Structure formats: structure tokens, C-alpha cells
Length: 243
Image (tube, rainbow, N blue to C red; front, side, top):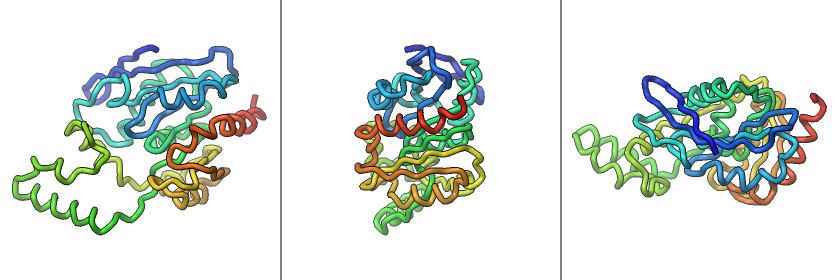
């Protein structure tokens, strides 16, 4: 494990990362989803992507990277990761991202984009959720925003106010135009039973990205843990032709 200090918008971020493999022909950056860390991605892929030089990164606010001092949006995360890449002096032909990490990977627009149940397609909220949002906005307008935890998503257990504000920034971003503008070669993998980012979202992304291949696999939002060997095989075969 190593640490890189990155400065962005006047703040410093300590980013924890690990490089596995030093003799591969191509480099791959691997980004985890919201609430996870690089250890989850290592557990899935470290045994199977051994033909690549793999960099596993803890995004700011997660894992062993530093906590946030100010709320971020996905574009901020992408800018921080871009500065991290430049600091390493490594060219990443391939970037893989799960869920929230998929949106960051898309903004980096690599030659090969690997999406694992990526976020970025907005799904309609239930009425009860929309009602909670409306009530919170009313309370905030009259100075009672301090009761934000009452209205927060169940995903914020133990989360700081800054991380909660960041989650609000990133959770409903529509990346349809970004996906449509990509010139990456995209491999899109999805869990058939995913209820966090439904299968229809993956199918929509595959239609939006011009050069894409779509694979639906058994499993939920973390389907890749049981299909990592197969996913690694597809990545290897797809990128081999450019070696």
C-alpha cells in the first residue's frame, strides 16, 4: 500500500492505493463504488487480472484515503483522480469502475472503459422518498435543516454531514449525455438481479455508448464478486488485439 498527496481546490487529499503487477503490457485503474473500498475490488480481481499492471485506489472519503473537508460532486472526484494519475506518471489504457466508480471512470474517458453496474441513469423515486425530500426542503427553508438525519437515506449510517452532502450531490446525476459522448471501447457488465442500479439502466447505457458490449450475469449489485474470473477473461481477450 502507498499514499499520494493530491491538492485540489486548495485542499489536500491523501489517497491510498496499491499496485499489483509490474510486468503487464497494459495498465488498469480500478475504482470501487460508494461505501466500498479498494479491498473489495482486490478481493474480486487480484487473482485474475495478472496480465495487467493493476492500480487499486481508495477514493477520497473511503477506505484508507483521507476524509472529506468539503462536499464533492462526481466531476470533483474525476478531477482528483486525474491529478492522481498524473502524479503516478502512468498511462491507463483501461479504467474499471463499479457503481459510483463507473461514473468517475466514464468522465476519465479511457481507451477501454469497464463498467460494473454503473450509476448514472436516474430511476424514478418512490412516492414516500419524494415526500421526504419535499418535507426536508420545507424544514430547511425555515431553518430546521439540522434535522437532516431524520430524512437521510439508510445508506448514511455513521456518515458525516460532509459525506451526506456529497452523497446528495452524486446520487441523482444524469450521465446520459456523458455516456452518449464517449468514444471509449466499453465493456458493460451487470447483475440481472441488481436492485440498486437495475438491469434496464445497464441496457440503456449500452445503447448510449456507441462502441459497447453488454453482458448480463447472475447476481445482484455485487455480482462481479462471483464472476470476476469471467470478467477478467473478457477484458483480457478484448484488449489483447492492441498489444
